[in-house]
Length: 529
Image (cartoon, rainbow, N blue to C red; front, side, top):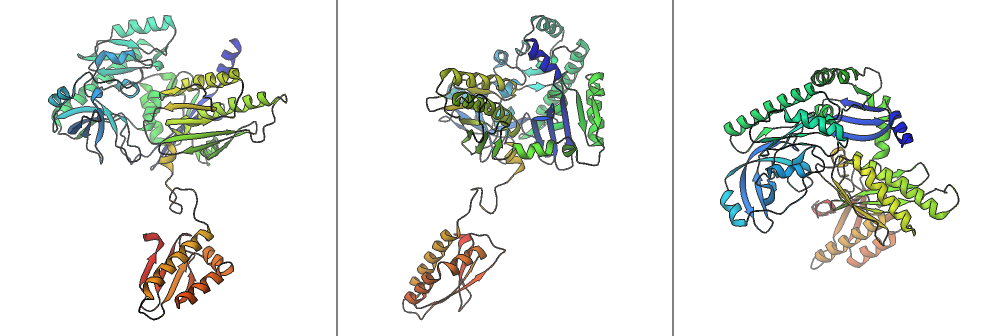
């Protein structure tokens, strides 16, 4: 126990912020190792956490959900059980950081008829976005609102006051409850003490409470005055959220490379703590800030499909729309004592630690299936399972892990709130359309010969010989000349036509066109099929 505490004290925790006009990136580094990473584009509207005055478009009883127009391109999805604020039920959560985002699914207490009577199409409703648009799906919303501050969460529609269960110290919980009891929450609202409040002074709670009540008043005025659909509250930008949610007593330093953001974050932290303000430093070095702190290299390594482990093993990450598939391999790992079972356990435990880190870094979620190296020992299986559960406790997203199955698979779910970092930073390759591969020259040769045959078969009836010009990528033309020349000559003889070929290095390797030489008409284009 003492050794564990000793290790904790040695951890150097830094927040590195790279703020540019088109992109803001934040990295949390512990002892030089990248542990958390977030990215935001200032030009894009911040959706998650925003509160909207929306309009019910339609009710789908089969889905037990309503679709709400909140002014975005796609209507928001609202479960029936999220349409009416549940008030004090929110305080049953294990983690009360932001109730509207972490609440587990429930069943609706109201019948379809009651919902339809209370929320007919065209009626207005105030909702908060709990999950941003992902892929082809629109945002998900709830009518149970929550407004997070630095130390408190204001919960409209509730009446109780509570302390986050992640604060385990009984004396500290008692102190916080006494402070909370003296705060006069606005009528019809509840208050929750956040985990970051542990050890904070009473004056800090008063400042945070005053800030939240002003925000809530502004929201109420906007709801009353504006027309639906419209946004009545938006979460602050990434830099401010970092100060609010990530800056705790265990942070040793905050470094920014932008003077404007530096001044802003110092003003924000000044309202919270003089000590925190003293931790903020402006970086003015010649190298980009992420390169200077060796974060850029770690980001590139972290987002590779293959992630190498120190022991010689490696982990493969494949992100699909439906699930995340993770494959663990021994690679060059030899094992510490020559035992095969022990070597497998070492790789699996190291891989699990990296998987937990990667889930946070990549912000990936949904169904996650980890294909571990097979372990015969049930004891070893339980060790890996318990280790993953323990590692996921530091994850801000809600997770659920199942024991290792008979097939050696470890299945889990991770809450998806926004698109993954890979989706934000990268787009599908225009060359392979996201497949990760293109057709081989042989496959292209087959396609080309198939289309030539079809065109010449259609045109030869009742007509003279038809001459064709085929434009292809140089790699395909090389295949046609060296290996398939005789097949093409046979086609000319069979259909009494003439074939000419031309290469175009500027085109896609899967691109080809077939043009009639007589009139220049394009008879076939592979990119338009």
